Image (cartoon, rainbow, N blue to C red; front, side, top):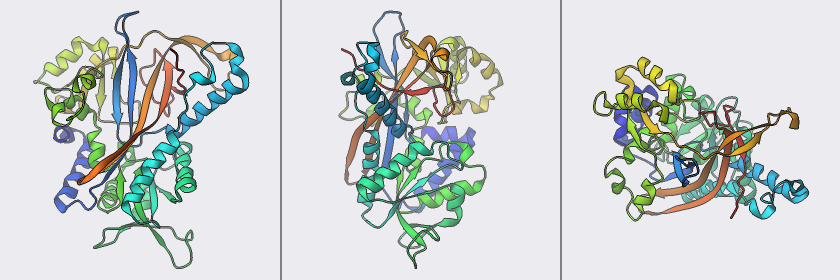
Length: 406
């Protein structure tokens, strides 16, 4: 976590989150349990044409890890087509047995339900903190339905701006309550919140004024279990990812793990502020094989290859701490068809594509409590190989399905 202190000096968003965490720490943490609904993303790496292929980690997502529900439904669509059409025998691989089941919805809901149970107030609700005009609502609604239908847990969805007037922390007990006027039985105006699930709060756009940061502090200061806590969100920063690759840092946190195997899944990384100007000089020299990453989530933030030298020319020296350089993963050549919505088969374009695998899991943990964790599902995103970014919501890639072959 110490690595984020330097980043926070030059990145206002990270700095604001860090200040909230320090305030909470100094005042005393009221809820020591953490819930993470995580997604670890991977690409196949084959630096030599026809050479050996390995799996390399792109990043580890600790907040608003999205598209689990939609990925499950895409998988069901492809399994249905295999069952109903056998894909017109177009490929021996496109069979039902080669299309694995994807049960991400139930798995992620199980994680939220585990936190709700640990909170131990059956009448409490779960709060989804969402963005105004939420475009990803359909990915979130499936979790809401699963929680109600399979766990009898109700969900309330509100934005930071709505919570600024509806949320309160009860003095003494530190219980988080959210007002729902007109939606509750007569005499009840608010509900107790067991778990706060952040589907917003991962980008500076979610905090246009200091008021949103104040609301984040209010939520964090309660005894409700946060998914994630602000410190767990900070731990998912790109700078932390980079620091874990350096020296013996990983050994401090990876007891009982195969550290060599874990390290082998990482590409080389370094901070642009490394050893004075060295980090920048190295990035210039190796630009064609690099991506520069800031401390951001949500896609569309990175700088690639030939754009790097020009970007470095405009990057103030004082802002280098906010960026890391990462060696590019080189996927093997894979041909496929991309079809734009509404264009029909006539609009299909055969091209080289890249598919990125995301593995979902949840972990509920805290002091004096055994870690409860489970791998719960996956997503696959496919894009044209010439596209540097990979986000679905920003239009760079599409949701896809795995096909297993021997």
